[in-house]
Image 1 (cartoon, rainbow, N blue to C red):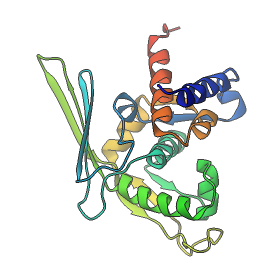
Image 2: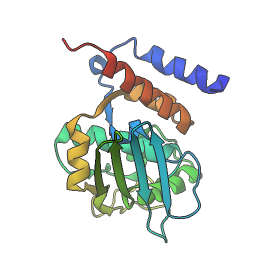
Image 3: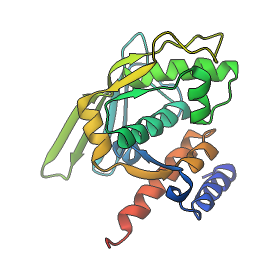
Length: 218
C-alpha cells in the first residue's frame, strides 16, 4: 500500500469515529463487489475476472460498450445499493438533473467528470456478472445482469437542466435481491473522501466488511 493510499484509509477510518447512522451518512455496498472488486484501470476486451480465495467475480461487457473501471462505478454501486436498501425498490431515480446526481456522488461538475459519469454508468449497468463460490468439494454459481433498464435524459451541456423524463435505473431482480440480502454497511463520508482512488475505495470497503464479519453477534 502506498503512503498516499495509507493516509487516505486512515482518514476514512477516523471519520467512522462518529457513527454514520447518527449523522445520516450510513450507506451500503453490494457484498459481491466487496469480496472481489471491479477493474481499477481500463481493460481491453470484454471479459474481466478477479479471485479472492474461494470466491471469483467475473464480468462480461457488451463489445460496443466495454467494461466499467475506476472510481466512478464504485461510487455508482454504493449509491445504487444504498438506494435499493432504503427504498426497497428495483427502480431508482438518479435525481432531477445531472448536477444534482453528481453532487450526491460527491463529484465536481467538470467536463471530464461529466463524460466519465455518463460513460461509466452505461458500462456498469450493461455488464453481466457471475459470482462463483467453491471449496474444492462443491460449488455455487450465480449470474445476472446488473440492470434490466437504464434511462438517462441528462443534457450534456446543461447539467442543471431537469429532463422532460426522469433518469432511472431498474436493477435486475437477481442483483436487487443480492443487494438487499446482506449488504455491507459503509460510511458515505468515507466513500466521498476516498473517491479519487479506486484501490483506496476497495481497501476501505474490504476492511469494513472484514471488521463487521469478525464482530460477535449481540
